[in-house]
Length: 448
Image 1 (tube, helix red, strand yellow):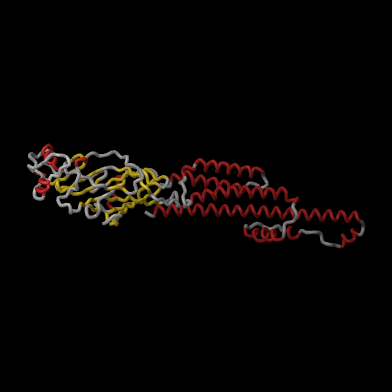
Image 2 (image 1 turned 90 degrees about the vertical axis):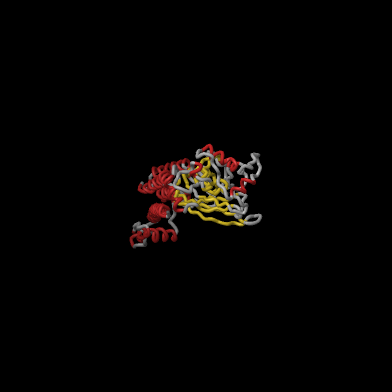
């Protein structure tokens, strides 16, 4: 190596020629001597570290998820991922061979050495899903091993795109992808491979999770692809599929349970007398309180896109049931208070409500409705009618009064049947909602 030319940008032909048969020489087994021996290598940091340009550089990649800070507005944000190839704790670690940095550990006194990253050739591995700049602190050093291995560790704070499926929110499981590939080098120069199995990466990630917040890591899957390039040739890409499960307890406690409590209170309001004004006032107060509650909790709901989450449907149905019960109370109160002014119900209404729905909701039909009617012709009235117009007028007034009583009873019965029917629908809605929520919650946690 006596022909070393210390000029920036000069290719060290003599050094490269001698390297194929020579290791780095250290004058003493200490760090200064090791650093002095590496100086010619540092001047080669502009080229891929291979003696023969046709040699392929293989880069091992694996990731460890240290923290999941949030998923907001269809963006997988603040994922701190770490690439590692061993059980040792490292930040972002990529591992490849530098053919210019082999030495004898006994001669140089060490089997590894940390050097500034700027003095080494580094692969241009990028994450395709990046949506913003990596704001994680930079680690200025990389490790060189005596067998020529380079270990480069860097933390990544990745704000990446992630297509979310929020239909089952807050019991949803999301799958986000991180794709790694070289930006400029094709497969004939640089190839990627997995240094760890997905199971190992998942196990290590869970043991190293520093913060999860709203999300829980389920698992990591990985697969290598060889994709055609837009120009010519192909390039390697490794995709990591990160499965996350939302912690649903916050939304259950702050959204679902209060909604269920309020609609249950509205259900028991049917116990109040329907002709009492306090019942309608009570329901209006509940609707007002529930509306304010939804406005306050609106920030907890996801921004909806093409798909509407089931929780939005549930909350809308709760509000619709409350409004429907208030309208039903208004109608029944009108029936009970103003039925004396109504004419007799049409026959189809009497058949639908008094015969069919009345039996369906187990309301006893008043026998008087079938027995009452216009006074029949009997002998006594026929004789009285002959007594004069005065008695005839009295009889007509009595018939009119009895007919009016029959009409009033019919409308009161119809109102009570409607009240009972909505009460049963309320019970069915609450029961089905509770069962559905429990089933979805259990299924989402068993999916892992």
